[in-house]
Image (cartoon, rainbow, N blue to C red):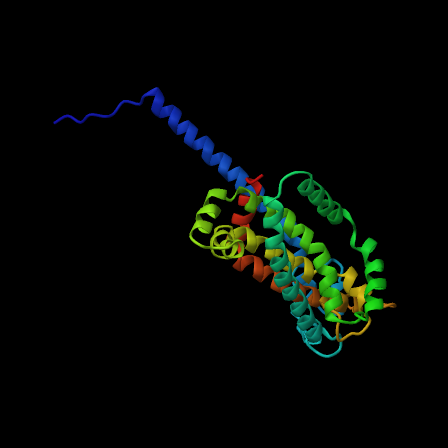
Length: 295
């Protein structure tokens, strides 16, 4: 009984080499990606590492790469009345959620209108929205302070929310416009023939279709409001109204800074953002990918 062995052809050898080359390329790209991720995440690790150290361990020479004796006193200080962090956390949550809801409520119909308008009006409007995005917060914080003081809105949640919306709203309209612009107009006409009005068409037909983009833009609006500092510092002087970013600034003392307490507070501020992006990761990625392909 004889056995036959398949001959090794040049095509088989070339395929094997090509497969091996692809695997090596994937391995190299993965190593580079992990290296870049490690570089970007090292400050986050060092923040957590510092928050778990005592004052003596923070200034140890050589620096301790790992907390030898983890110290939880800084996290106890964060949630104590010393720095007012619990109230500031509630303030930030209220402000960021309000900015998120109001931004989407205004940006969705505004983006739809801008996407459907034609001619110079649309171009001029987009230029103005872009210019507003280029202005630094410090340039408009003083005029906003003067205006809100005349209206009696200083030291109120409403002043911070309106100031934050002045930044998030142009951003949302600019990013939402391509989604509405690429939505088939024929589908809207069919919906109107079925008896739906413009608002009903937007709510029942368009919004479910572009949901990843809306979630992505809403997430960024929440993030921008959560981390905003300039408006909150300018428009508030009472501690009961100030958000987490201003409370974080209070830990920096004139004659010294409790770095472990500061890093623990920074970790508390960053935690909701990390949770938000982990939970909504697939929507954010889909929204960014979809927006990148729309004109």
